[in-house]
Amino acid sequence: MSTAVPSPEQILAARAVRHHLTPSSRGSSDSDYLEIVGQLGPLRPPSFEFPGTPVVLFDRHEDAAGSSAQEVGERIRRQRLVFKGRFQGGKVAYVRTSDVPIYLAAFRRERPLTGPERVVLEVLESEGPLHKSDLAEVSGVRGRELSAALQRLQEAFLVFEQQLETEWDNAWFSLEREQPEWLVAAPEQDLARLEVLRRFSRAHVATSAQEAKDWSGFPLRQVRELLTELTESGELTRVAIDGWGERFMASDWEPVEPEASLAILDPGDPLVTAQASVLKRKFDGLPALKYVYVDGDVAGIATGRWGIGPFDVDDVVFIEETSSERSRDDIIAKLRRHFPSPRHRIVSFGGIPLDGRLV
Image (cartoon, rainbow, N blue to C red; front, side, top):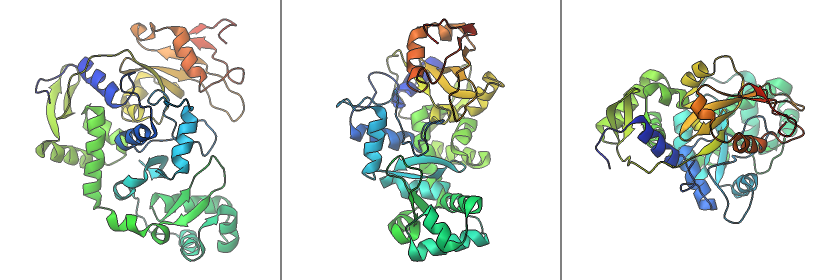
């Protein structure tokens, strides 16, 4: 454990390692995949992909056996080692199945049930599991009303959708009926949120209360109180970082040798959501398809308008010129994993139209 106050560059280097975005920290086994989910979860499936896509750890995990990132995610999910739920304000994401009681308690949204919600829940408790079409037939709740009821019940962790394959239609279960041990093991909400923020703060290395709030969706006042509690217990240290101001710093941080890193991050990536307020100002008005992560910093944005059919990446924008000095071809090659040609064009890079070879 280092006692010196680090520089921003040292924090970014350590954060890159704890987020597994450097060559030396990248995972290669199924156990590594699960460890990454445990350290960084809840992790969201990639945006603008087919519904039911698993968590795909591009740039954080490279399978030793040669399986693609998608294949690894599907394999882990098929073994029921990760759990799909709604976290962080109702967003679909995955956590390790062994961690469900903690995240259930931390993110559960408890509200009075509406009539349709009560009917759907009672049907699943007595006759589930059921696919959505069967649930509509038995309950009489249909269409958008059924979708809304299931979403709110899922946010309350009263029901869950078992997603084992990349399919549209999956079975829905009553959580209390199928997994009562999760409810028994769930801690009090404050304790669960304390543990969730401890994990986040450790991975983020140094966080502001606003970053922790943006990432978690918890009320800012409660976030401050919990970060203070973690400071008093010795998990975090309150420090003033040159150019950043006050941060809550993981007490077990150690300086690391900086490594060159280049990654494409999803809008739902934890590094992106933690900096949501900053990135909104940094790339004001630009619709985000992906973000470009360069040497520890979310430095660029792939901007454009998503569509169900083929759509283009209009531009890859960097606010600071030094951030775009990495090879244009390297960045485009990584973007192509998400926007394959010829279905998608990358029209411009840094405001300069690309020639036919790269489009």
